[in-house]
Image (cartoon, rainbow, N blue to C red; front, top):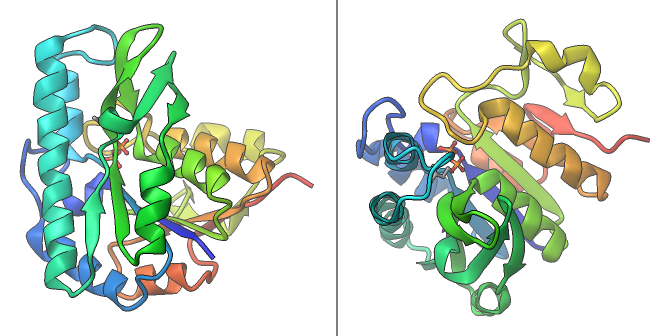
Amino acid sequence: MTRILKIGGSILTDKSRELVARPEEISRIAHEISTQPDDLVLVHGAGSFGHIPARKYCLSQEFSREGLRVTHNSVARLCELVVEALGQAGVESLPVHPLSCLQLHSGRIERFLLDPIKEMLKNGIIPVLHGDVAMDLARGAAIVSGDQLVTYLATALQAEVVAVGSNVDGVLVSGRPLPSISRKNLPEFENAIGGSAGVDVTGGMRGKLLELLDLADLGIESVIFNAGIEGNIARALNGETLGTRIRRSK
Ligand code: IPE
């Protein structure tokens, strides 16, 4: 039973300050994951390690070789912190950098070498992926969000649990999390669902939700929950419904 957990960059980093990680949060999350590490793929967001350099070099609009190097190296550093924290918590994981194993076309994943990820899972190792820059056949390069990685991996690996941890309690409408949402009732709430509080080049909550609605329509439901609250990650990994459940349209 493969499970996919995404931890948003807003939890792991201070989203308003470049290269500022939150080591206590990274360590807490690593310990929560260490209580049930089996068959788990971890995807983490880029937070300020990705969004700030990506905005500085205008990577959403322009091709910049220097911007690609700086942004990738920065998110790779955050990934290293996560992998190290997991090791300290007693679980083995390895970094899988999207830049090196997938190809985009117009911002969407077109090819993705999954064999090493499957092999890690078979051998009791947690693959750790992250929002990254990647080469793009139409645009030279583009940004691939952790949320797009989650949808792709969940489909390809036929995941049974997909949990997306954010720094809010779910999909908020008037400050409260919706218990569930599907593509059918999206128009009712669409205008009330916001972007992100910090710097975000991949669409904040709206971008996340659109990815997960696509996944739900393929038959794989997920939850968006608050990973900043202790104990929630373990609950989400158990397949409990917390936060907002992203349902398939009937
Ligand atoms: C963004 O990744 C990647 C880059 C900006 C390079 P995400 O969209 O997954 O990151 P968070 O969760 O919003 O921080």
